[in-house]
Image (cartoon, rainbow, N blue to C red; front, side, top):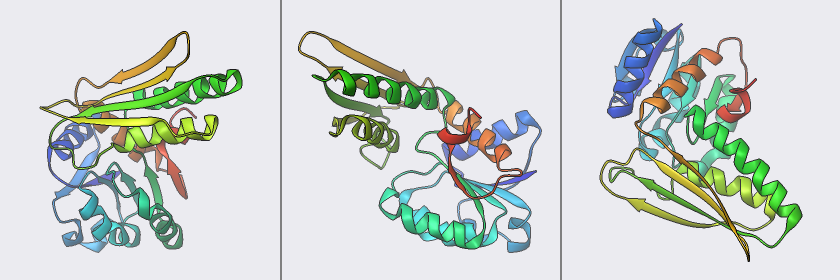
Length: 222
C-alpha cells in the first residue's frame, strides 16, 4: 500500500512519521493535492488533514482520482450528503471521522450506552464541553458534534454545548449528564495529536478490500 498525504502541517507530519513506523510508503505529501499526478493517485490511498475550505474545494478531485480516501478534516458536515454521493458515484472507498483516536471512538460507544440508559430512566439533562488549541478553525469541534448527535438520537434533546480555544490543547471532550440528585461525567483527554495520526493510518490500512463510504467508529472494532 502507498499513501499520499493531503495537508502537510502538524497532522501531516505526524501521519508521515506513523507511516514510517509501520513500514508503509509515503509516496507524496502535498499542500495542494490537485497538483498530484493522477496516475500516481490511482495507486494510492489519500489521508486528508487539511482545512474545511481546502476539503470543500478538493473533495471531488479526491473522489475522482484516488484508490481510497481517509478524511480527518472536519467542518464540512453541512455538505456531507453531497460528499458521500460524490464518492459513491465515483466508486471510491472513503473512511471519515470527526476523530480518529481509538480512545475517542470508545468514548462514542460509552456515550451511546449511557445516553440510552438515562433516556430510559428519565430526569437528566446533558451537556458537551470541548477544549482545543487556538489554531483550530471549527467551533464546536467535529468530535463534540458527533457526541451531541449520539446523545440527541437517544434522548430526544440536544445537549448544551460549549467550546474553548486556548494555547496548544490537543483536545479535551467532556460529556455530562445532570440529574436532580447527581451528575455523571465522561471525559476524554488527548495528550498529543499522535493518536489521531495512528488512527488515520489504521483507517488507511482498513481500506484494503473495503468498498463504499464508512465512518471510522463503525469499522474500527470489527
